[in-house]
Amino acid sequence: MVVGGNSDSPVSEMNPLLGFYATVNASFKSQRIRLREAMELFTINGAKIAHKEDQLGSIEVGKHADLVVLKQNPFERKYAIVRA
Image (cartoon, rainbow, N blue to C red; front, side, top):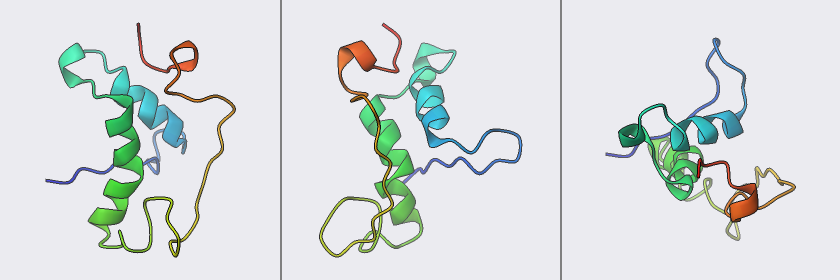
């Protein structure tokens, strides 16, 4: 099963970074996922669900570019959005 993330709910802010935060910092440890998995929810998995993985979802030659540039690398420990 392919699961995708989204940020278009009318009850929350349209900000995928909040989705990343929520998935890696869920209230119960058993519900948390790793940051890399969270990023896949909002990138390649969304493209797979839409059957457009040949056009979207990853940075590759020939694919549409829809990018966000972050100030810090979220995978570096000092900037990590996951709880210690």
